[in-house]
Amino acid sequence: MNLTGYNKLIQKDRVTGFEKFAYGCGEISTNIVFTIATSLLVMFYTDVAHVSSAIIGMIIAVSQVFNGVSDIAAGFIVDRTRSKYGRARVWMLRMSIPYAIAAILLITVPQAGVFAQTIYIFITYNLMLTVVYTLFQLPFATTMTYMSRDQNERAQINIIRMAMSPIGNILVTLLFTRILNAMPGGGMDSQKNWIILTALYAFGAAAMMLFCFACVRERVEVHDDLDGEKIPLKQAIPALFKNKYFIMLFLFFVFFAMYQTFSGTMASYYCKYIVEDTNIIGNVNTACYGITVVATLLLGKVMHLMSKRNWCMLGACFIIAGSLVLLVNPKSVGIVTFGGLLRGIGMTPILGMIFTMIADAIEYGQWKTGLRTAGAIQSATTSGQKFGQGIGSALIGFIMEMNGYDGNLPQQPAQAVTTIENLFIYGVTVLGIVMIVILLFYKLDKEYPVMMKELLEREQAQMQKQGK
Image 1 (cartoon, one colour):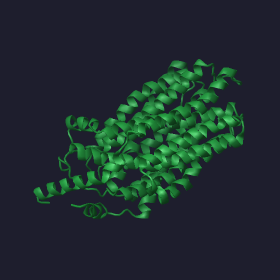
Image 2: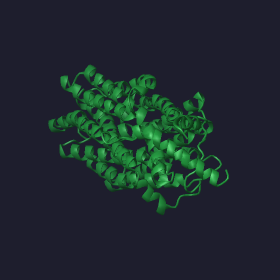
Image 3: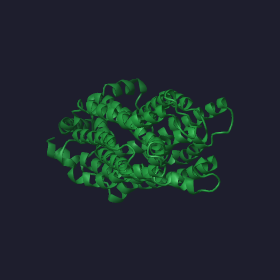
Image 4: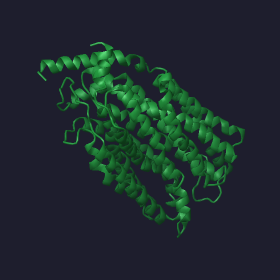
């Protein structure tokens, strides 16, 4: 088979525009609770539930050890799933309602003693992010790898998905605190208001995922060495760690999630204590994520100009620039908003390309080992995100506690305020640099066409051998 024949073969199944839109709605759904967890949950715990930031940091750090492992386990579960709705898509149906319920439980922290609150937060945090969110988001992301094997088709699916992705973030960061402040009975300081509003967001998110489930389809027929049979764990685990690109992308997602956590969580504190206006939290996050809606659509027109890796490296450079520009005037609303705009531009090529790179790594894994472990490799995304989020949240909690931050104080000591400023500026800068270093080792963009030609020839030979 020459490369022309390869291109014709993988382009035989086209995904409609409506189906791509429906898949994007699923992305909005996954982002709503994720944004609440990364941008607002720590502040809720410290300033509304009045739990020590050190305790929160410890809980999140310990939880993420289980959380990251659970993602890899969930990947193996997806790879072994067989149903009339496909391998991955069925989990959208199974987990939508549990997703909404678990999100609400995050906010219903009892007004009890420190020990009781600690146990409750540990249980509900793990129920949401270790179990429910993992079996909700990972199969959703894996579904794209079964919608098409065409690199360009996948890129277009992901471009639309990522263009819609910021909508979930904006719905939370722009509106959540404003709605809370407008609600009677204590506004943003009322736990009852947090519970009511979180419930509305969570069930809205569940409805969007059910719409996605109803509209998307799995098309890819798997013809690996097991010819669709369930993969034994004793074969799947070694195959996973023979995939060097899985390891690279896992590490990238760890640091990218740490960036999202630092940027999202510290933006709330930065606006409250440096700029001294909590209402501009929405402005900063809208600038960061809102620009990605337009920029991602534009990216679809120019993505052919560079490799996916180079686009991601360029994005990391913009993230760094968006952090360092705050040094011009750290208290300026305009500068802080402009910094958010630069960070959003930087996130655009990363979010537009990185999930397609995961799909490419799945094909590489099948080519390298003869086994298609799509769910397990997709866990590079979610497990990396969970480890990164946990490490980032833990670092924030411990560093702020060490420097005198106390959510019960009406005014924070000078050292705590300086720490908030440094984490938001220099912490994000360092994470951007690390992301660039990891991507320097990624070479799959150049290898992919020849690799896929060999893989499809192998699959055709296997099908002929079996008389299919």
